[in-house]
Amino acid sequence: MTIRVLLADDQALLRSAFKVLVDSEPDMEVVGEASDGAEAVALARSERADVVLMDIRMPGTDGLAATRTISEDPELTHVHVVMLTTFEVDEYVVQSLRAGASGFLGKGSEPEELLNAIRVAAGGDALLSPVATKGLIAKFLAQGGSSDGDGSDGAHAERLAQLTGREREVLVQVAGGLSNDEIAERLSVSPLTVKTHVNRAMAKLGARDRAQLVVIAYESGLVRPKVD
Image (cartoon, rainbow, N blue to C red; front, side, top):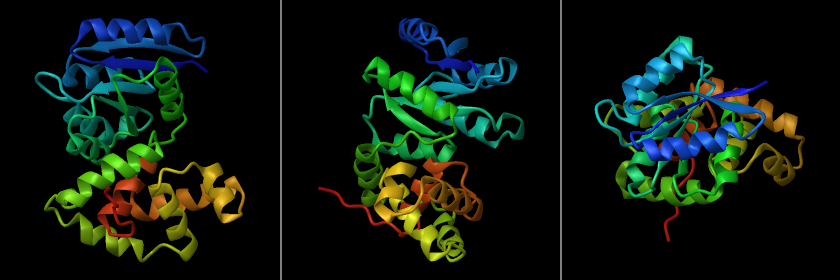
């Protein structure tokens, strides 16, 4: 199956570079290009995109608003957003995850990293490396970014009570940026068992994907950020 990719960035030169790279792969193709968030949402619908590479900062409707619109649309549940960022502002990274993005990627990443990100997102997994998770997210939350004033912290904590001991244990490992295989090895269980626990935790916590699980783990206080 060919992965249908949508490029959303206000820099035409960058979109062109990404298009050449993506179209060079036999298992993916660029099906549209958008220069702002509103156009990205429209093209995600019309072109049946699987993955959107979304810039955070764009004129008009920015990437955060567009990602939120996509994640809240029941007709676009198949669309996975990878946020493109320069990592200049940690807050944007966390906001993108809260908005429903499957993960984030630096614009300066190597070509293979970008292609891998597309494949990971298309497969329904979260693009969250241990470095990004422990560094960017933890740093932001430690600076007081864990609450946005909507009472979500209390709601998350209440939902955590529904998890079994093993599900909580797996959630802690997910928040550390570990893959199912890595968690399975650490807990001496099968990857399939880990996947089952992750899926159950997502259902109980109302999380869209693994990226949302990470944010919830930190916001609820289950995992305490450590900042150097």
